[in-house]
Length: 167
Image 1 (cartoon, rainbow, N blue to C red):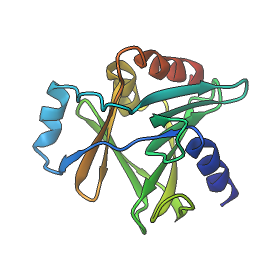
Image 2 (image 1 turned 90 degrees about the vertical axis):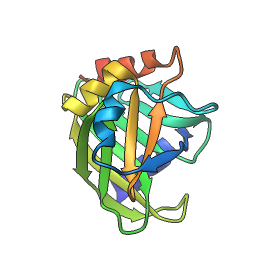
Image 3 (image 1 turned 30 degrees about the vertical axis):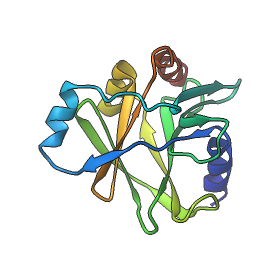
Image 4 (image 1 turned 180 degrees about the vertical axis):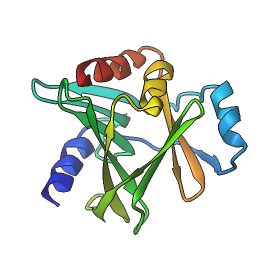
C-alpha cells in the first residue's frame, strides 16, 4: 500500500493526459499497427531522470492528473506501471503498434480521481515496450475503449532515454 501511494504521488506530480478512445474491436488491433495515432495537442510524454530512478509519464506538463506512468531504477530492466482506472479494475491493458499485453495490477482507491489507482510490474524487454520504444506511442484499453498516447515530434527522445537508462 505504501509503494502504491509513493508511486501515485511521484507519478501524479509529473503529468497527466487524456486522449479520445475508440470502441474495442479485435479487428482494430491490426489496423492500429498500420498507422500511428496523431499526437494530442497539449499532451505529451515527459521524461524525468534522477540519479536513482527514471520516470516517463504521459500528460500535460506539471499536471497531477496522471494517465499512464512508467518508473524504473536505472539498469534494473524492470518497470513499474501506474495508471488510474475504474473502481474494481485490476488489469492494465496496453497496446503499441499491434503488440498487446495485459498486466495484472494491484489497486487502491485513488486520492486524485473517482476510481482506483493501479500499479503493475513488467520487464522492459517485453515486446510491447520494445515496440513503444521504436514507435513512440502506447494505447491503453479501459472498459472497451482505446486511449492513445502519442509523442509529439522531439519528445520521442525521452521515450528512448527512459528505456536506455532502465536497461
